[in-house]
Image (tube, rainbow, N blue to C red; front, side):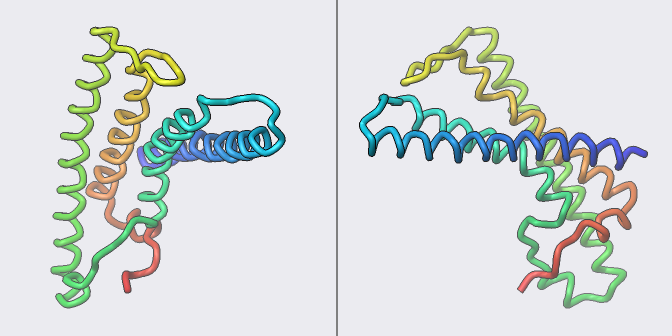
Length: 166
């Protein structure tokens, strides 16, 4: 049940990331067309593209992890007996959980600090800085939940893993 809730949340974030990719594609195509046909000026497109890439990366990372798409260095786990490989997998998942919880704390602090201070981003686009920090806590929280679910039920990880590293 816990893992299914995580999957639904992660898929929702991946859909938002995909929507960002569609927006980015349309934005770049529109900008190129406008420049070549000398129609209208869109000086904010580079800034919008930067922030879309940032958001898409954070929103898509949990989905990639859940599907086993991240880089796996398995030289050590392939060289040891299966029992040791499982233990190393649990250590790896524990480290992943710990690191993502630390990053979650810092992401929430950065978001809170920016919100409280009312810091603004001044570029071609002007908006509150905390908007930029919103995706990070969701990403780190989801990544931590995925590692936790793999610690609780290691068999779930095997279903989501990609091919072994080369």
